[in-house]
Image (tube, rainbow, N blue to C red):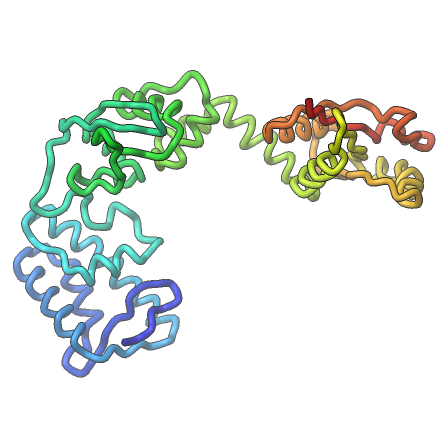
Length: 344
């Protein structure tokens, strides 16, 4: 058996009796006829599945192979719409589903052949311990979403059930109600916007994700603050270092103090050089942020550091470095701060 290509797409099986296999499949996938397409496609797959496969390594052949499976996806979609009772060859399903770049709209329809449940069928859910009742049509309101994919059919839903027979989804139930409200009536959530945004991303409710990204909370976080922090060198690594230093000093103590140096410009950095050399000579640990090329000032960076550390569950506050902690050199006092972690 031929090895699978690196991208996971099944190889095209070529042999003397079916040397035009790619062209034939492309032709079959484009046909509008039903019965001939079904029979010929099944025959081609049957013939090739019984022959030693031959794989070419060129990029052109790999591109053709992907194109073949892409076209088959569209052909099967049209085929099943025209003839709900036809069978889909398993080899085709495997080939199409292995293409991560294939749009879900080109794949086989969600409802298995010969089993099309009523969209008004009632569905009882247990989402992280919260109970919900809705309809199959509501869950499948957004074609191609992960939530719709979970409930292709009630008989073959890709979710387990609890002891009461409800479909169980292991996600925070607190925010799932907002997802259902949007699917039912298009209602936008008014509370817990960041949390609902996260759940909408998980369930791939794309229209809701886009609407939430336009709200001040998500827009400000994603476009303004995070874009600023991406311009601060080693920001995430410095946050982790601060937490590690604070935890290292927490033994039998109520507070931990972490010394931080923040410089916005190269000129600020020059003012701090002598003080930083003193800290290095005395083996004092300091976490240095900046410089960065963006409009926000030092106070904005400090607020972001506090916000992101508190988001991890820590209680923290900052202030100028006291003389007891460290005495910076002249003209450098405004760049040194102490972050105090409170443990109890």
